[in-house]
Amino acid sequence: MGGMRDMRSLTDLLDRERRGGRELATARPGQWHVATVPTNLAAAVDSSVLVCLWDVEERMGGACHFVEPTGALDALEPGRYGNRAIAVLLDELEAAGCDRRRLRAKLFGGADLRAGSDLGARNVAVAEQVLDALDIPIVGADTGGARPRKVTLHTDDFTAWVWRI
Image (cartoon, rainbow, N blue to C red; front, side, top):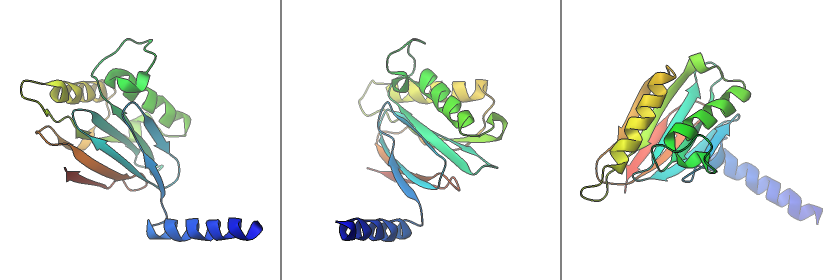
């Protein structure tokens, strides 16, 4: 029994080495993730928006993935709404040791996939408004258009890769 556990640990170690020493995480719609260790954070976005925040000194960050622009402050699913999801992510980052004054943001998604729909544009606008009100600069974005995206973010150096799908 101990041999299997050792083998699994070795396999995990080798897999992590292939990923550049980073953990793996996924931010699905309505979710957020804070990474205190180097992490490959992945998400697939369409009209939804992935807001990534990073502390330039602590070199850690996280992301929230929301699907609707606004919701009530007492919403049962705070991660679903942009105005609430960003606030929750910010609270969790500060609890992990980040300083709001050192945060930088990147935005991804907000595609309008159906003719006549502006949900993606409204999601991006809410993210920009909330970040502006919080005085968090947006240093990168890949938003809008008519195609969904797959995004991978390294939380330790804030590099991101985007594939239009």
